[in-house]
Length: 368
Image (cartoon, rainbow, N blue to C red; front, side):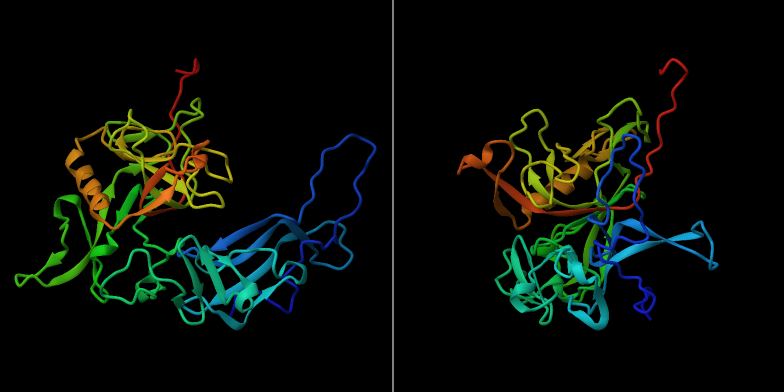
């Protein structure tokens, strides 16, 4: 059974006015229109299962009560999917006024309802995708010789996501301070995944004595943090440093950082939002997210080396990215979009997830 209810009015349109009343205009007040903003509730793959309005509805327990006993969140849409993204009949519903308003759904991708009906077609940077067939319309820009170039999610949509229509390569868990990376060029369909440390990572895959690949690999990096500084492996965040903020959750393209000659060996992380490759997180306006080795993080994904030398480990990461399939994308930072020759190398994607749990640095009374 679904966790929401059609019968009890759980689905609310954004233009619903009750139970709100006129405000007192005798004093100067600021105001904003509520019911226009929607928040996603997603699963581990980024599938949008519901959207919630920035508004709540009061409920009474007893007839005649003058104060609300509790509040309900106002849901504006709910939906469940078959594995490859088709909406399940009788398991989705949209508020009448909001049917086409929220654009994103399966895999976090944008819906194009005009082509094949509600939820039957999605689009991303590298593809047009039919959720009923579980197939892309165009050839995969990063094909795997063991699979059809029209296949999606390595034919395993329960485990894999592909928000851009290319290859998912990494997941960074902020709460666990762990980063997992895999090279889909070396991925063989049907083989089990094995989590390995950098010292055990095999660039050509895990193979038996006859040279046959037996496992796919997840490279695990421990002690990876975001937003803070580390001393001897202990990460804290300085409340007086505005730059020490965690990178927001979401999907980020891994790009080259060659234009920055001060930080050789770093990689640029660019939010996969409505304005890709501009080095700016559209929702927050923050800039400069990077992926690097170090002990200070200004919103970067940083492999902590304050307690030990991790150069050899970082070299494994760099070799994986340098030797995988890559695409070239247009640089759009600042005025670079005006330069037709300004290009970036796109290595793949990192998904940032998990709670931000970096503790604040303890300060004395004089702020030191």
